[in-house]
Length: 349
Image (cartoon, rainbow, N blue to C red; front, side, top):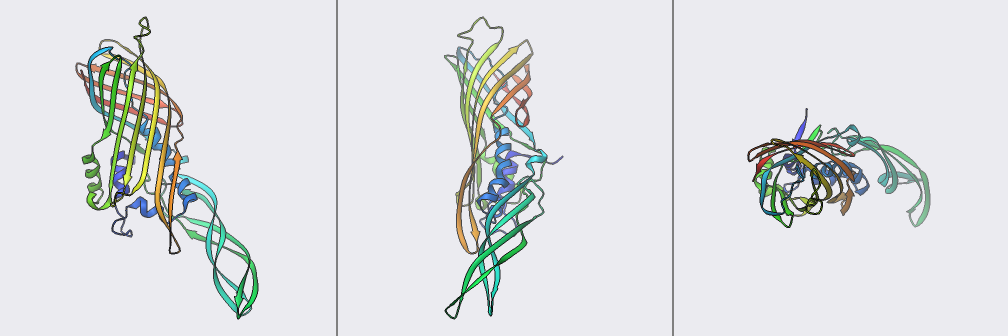
């Protein structure tokens, strides 16, 4: 099975391909070959998967003390299987092609509008082989010869090569450090992050130099509030939580290429026995992926900047935890547009 940890996947995106310029990374160089319409369809599955991953594994208990020291520090992770529907796309879009036209003694090469049709083209998670896209240009225009305007009309059909996938994998995982500190008035503070050193190690493992090809970082902040203070007769723990996370991918010049903003709000419940607890909840969420790059089109430099919304809007969370003194081990799954598997290992006191 082909899979990647998230920080390694970001590192692979940062590693420069042989054909790229010195300070390019692979994702930036690949997107630079296509316009916005194609790039949107190509990267939409990335927005979907990152949202499913980032907003999973955000809790393993709903127990919140009203007052007193309450700390959890551990590794929290989630894994998403990439479905077949996220590997290919079909798209009809407009662009330009160079067409050689004839009008009497005149032969000219004109840049004309055309309709392109991509059929089952690979997304960022698709096959690396570069596909062919069909195009059709119907034209009715004029050219000038010796001061005389000559009409030209016709159509030109053909194929052009476009970009292949970058990460043909089955699973992508997002392990990160998770710190929860409380409690004051039944409220805990939550911090999540991926250490920069792990990203740097991933870049080096992928054959890149972090000082030359760019950087990746992730940070999250949230709060959780216990509801048992208001409902003391409940036979279980109940809490609400909101959490925001941001991941950023930049090139060597620290120009941003990708930025992910993920927001999640959940209603949580859990029941603990001596060594075992069960937890669950419902969660609403939104993920935004901002993509920025430069499209090189016939010698012209076109800045591209767009934002995509992830597919996940709500999910059901189910899991169980094992309490072995200060050691806490949990595993679970979430169910929505994607099924995400979660786990964690940490110390709680």
